[in-house]
Length: 365
Image (cartoon, rainbow, N blue to C red):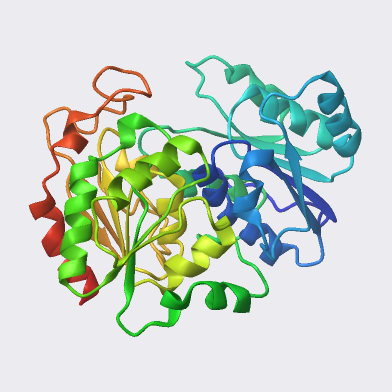
């Protein structure tokens, strides 16, 4: 890759734009962390969608979190423009979308960004930023893709995910005594945002029964959306009393603490699984049509600038075991067998419990 010189002057105000889903925001934290280490005295603000800002709660690398609605109205858009217009000496866009690109133009006179490949729509954006890197959606992990932005300004890349955190955890331990029990617990997060990433309810119930047979408490988690709450209840109703349902009851920072105290976390291809991987807790991630090279959870302590996971197969790297559904089409990179987000994915539906049980034992030992 072309070597770029460092900035002539250390920027005192930096804006990082990461306007995607929860997991994507977490995967952008290595860029923020690297910038903080390079410019310890700078004001580093991050622009995100309002519904993802919780992923950055308590992040010590960030000065201010700027939240914008997913679909801002005219008043909200103009308010954001007034807030960021030419307020920064450096603007960094981690993705190629039109809105992040526009906000870099507005925020700073010096801009670095990921841009589409020349063959794709939007390739022209490279003419409006000072330094750019082409976005690779197939063969480069998202964390590594983001870190390429740092090469553009000669900032040493640090592939460290920073989980959300809160300063006072005493109330959490008082509210949930299971956090200090000697028997230990396992967190199951069964509901991803999209149906095509779901495993089966029957599979989750069987795994919970297996964990109970090992003498472990099962903790169920989910977001606050009603469909997620209902999904978790449908699992809980088939389990014994040695099950705790935390669905919709804790913040992301609190959930990060709970997962960090767990003996194991099991979840699908979702933002919370990325969050779990950022702790030192062993993680079992269930993947179907999604490309693991690009979107596998980033293992804790993984420092290499090579993709941690291959495209095919069940694999373990550091604290993350990725279980991939089988099939000649896996990973198809598509949204389920019917090609939409509400579709089922046969490769996931057919993952047997018997495949996961020995991985649980290995992770616990």
